[in-house]
Structures are given as structure tokens and as C-alpha cells.
Length: 146
Image (tube, rainbow, N blue to C red; front, side):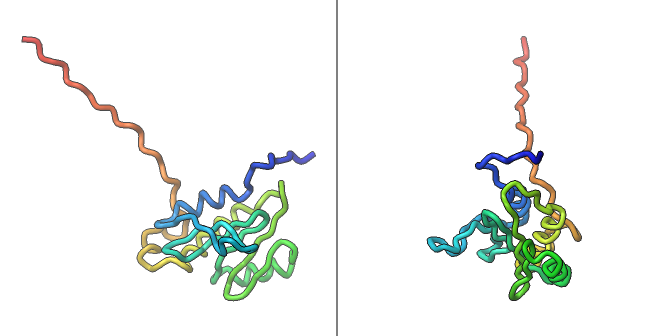
């Protein structure tokens, strides 16, 4: 029997965390105040990832043909839309194709970001997770006894 997720769990959370590792990536809201409102991850005020409750959307170039083939094979799950935007739909509790989406988020960022920001990335891979630096302890010198 499949394990149910709590209503508070967000299947797109790993994708959000991955996208925020990119240089100058920040969260935003697209179409605020409308029925189309969605959380986004942007670079310099340009969205490269839209995160809906039951879908994610990325901008593709190189993988657009692959996405179109997936859309033809699984039209209820994938949609290759106008100008390279690809939507992946999922239902609550459904496992996301994380490996594929990680690759597509990387491609989407590289399609939207400036050349200078793209040059900061590792060749053909996603940025490493940001590590929190351990707290530095200050060593105190013992007072010299005279």
C-alpha cells in the first residue's frame, strides 16, 4: 500500500531547494492576485521555474524535443507548450521524476540567466548545496603568570 503524505507536505520542495542554489536565484510570485498565481524561482526578475500545487513548469531549449516526445507518450503528465515552456503535472502523493526535473531546472536556469551568471556554474551540472559554515571558536590566550 503506498504511503500517504501529510497534507502539509510539498512534493515540489526538493525542486524549490535545488533552484534556489543557483546564483542570484530568488523566490517570487507570478500573476499575484489572480487565479493563475504561482510561486516561482527567478533570476534577475525572470522566472525559470514555476511551482504549482500539482505542476511545475520550466523553459527548455536542448531538451525540448525529448519533452515533446514525452508529451506525446504521456499527454496527461507532460505538455510542451509555446516558446519552450514545458509543464509536468503530478497528483498528490505521486513521486516526481526528480532526476529529469533536476536536469530540466538546470537547463531552464541556463536559458534564462545572463552569460555571466551561467559562467559561474559547474560545467554541465547543478550547483552544489550551500553548506553552512561551522561556527568558529575563538581561542583565548591564558594569562601568563608572572
